[in-house]
Image (tube, rainbow, N blue to C red; front, side, top):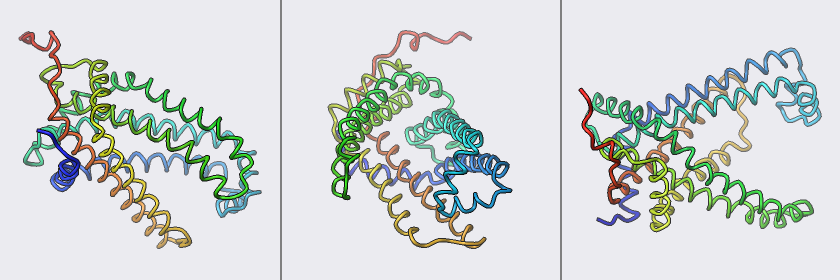
Length: 306
């Protein structure tokens, strides 16, 4: 059965509408982690700047005040960087479990909440170490993406340095970003379909992470549909972000009412972006079902000892 783009988009819409509880649960986990990160950053900055009115000026856009804060409170900003890095590292570890659970739910399609929770937890735990091994297999691809970005940036840096108008900036930026984004899309999609195969076949075939990654590499290369489907998801993600930035521009929100409104608007945008990502994962599972089965590893066929 050969699926088209419409089939993948329809599968994504069905997945989001059927498993909204799973979507909200993952969103809650992300929000709690982001909230803990913001609380840690707020605590560090409060310790350093709560007694300095100049920091308020820096937040309001005073460039001199901002430069002064950056120069004279370097340890505090290093601490902020450490908090952000630790949060990103923890989120990466969490995402292996969460994505494994999401793929498992879309793969098995449980009927009720109890079964959904059971499948989510079992799939996330079963594929966690396999996803970790897969992350090491994907490292050369990310290095290649960085190399492409560095090479294009070095080639266009003189033109950016002497740009005098917006038009002089747009072309070099396009030369820098477009090749890097295309290569990033390719390797990101490869990693996604490798995870799909590990989730769908891990219990029965125990495929090797290295072999699975190269199988996904060949599959994505032969099926441009996978890249088009993934690109649509990222374009929608970008459009939602740009629409939020456009609407928020020139509409400052002051006071407690403005802060509360801004919080809920940002949470709504984040939830919408996560729903887009959910729909992409559901479509990938649908296409992953049509792939030929990998060769079973010998140890997967041995009976387990009682």
